[in-house]
Length: 78
Image 1 (spheres, rainbow, N blue to C red):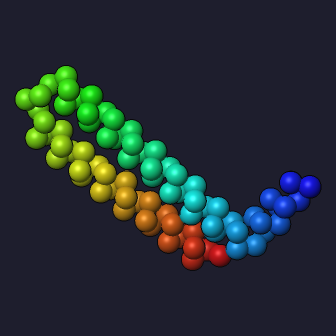
Image 2: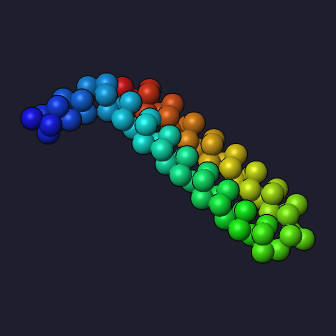
């Protein structure tokens, strides 16, 4: 029963919504990992805060850009 429902969703426009949702979850996990690693690094070496913060912002922006592109592709593919 559940398998049939999932198959029906994936064969219609639900696949695009599912893909967009997976992209959003992946981007959130990636940004959380970036933030966590940056906080650990800043706590261990306080003198490198400005370098770590700059790198964190750049990497976060790249992750957001890729995830936005992936969501647009998912929605256009439907």
